[in-house]
Amino acid sequence: MDALCQPKQTTECPLKAEEINLLTQWIDQGAIGLSEDSKEPLQHWAFQPIHQPAVPGVDDDRWVRNPIDHFVLDSLEQHGVAPSPVAARATLVRRLYLDLLGLPPEWDRVQQFIQDERPDAWELLVDELLGSPYYGERWRDMQTAPGTKPTHPEKSGHTVTG
Image (tube, rainbow, N blue to C red; front, side, top):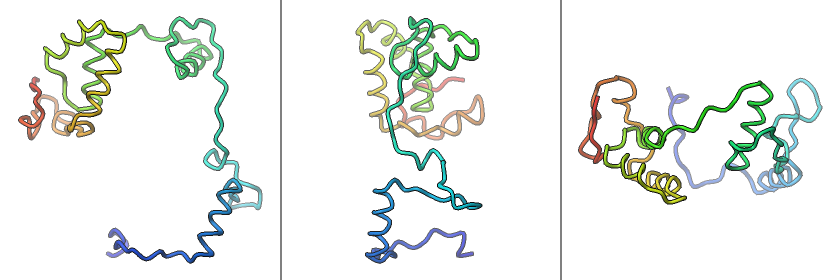
């Protein structure tokens, strides 16, 4: 049964100073590993040095808003697929609330976002929701059983419908 339990916390370091120094040197040298079936250096991506990739060129950059979009659009173009049209602002705010808080936004909040014409309105909303104490609380009741209500709706400040 002990194999299934979390190890006890300890302030003692299980490694000796020379072992820590050896690991530090290995990391400083690029942390080259060896594959299990040979003595060749392991080429796994996790063992490769970090570098900034070149941003790919695309045929039509009207869809591109940031460097990551170049990578997405390049992949779409390679597969002959066009990007989807930009979603309506009401759809975007609903998706954001569901992704970050696990609950749909109140109607007033949707309307407020739709009417917000500031160029950084989206970034401000994202920052607001990331700063919410409910960020990341994936309300399991709503996600797994359609039509059910959250266990503690009074904590959310949101109206739950459905």
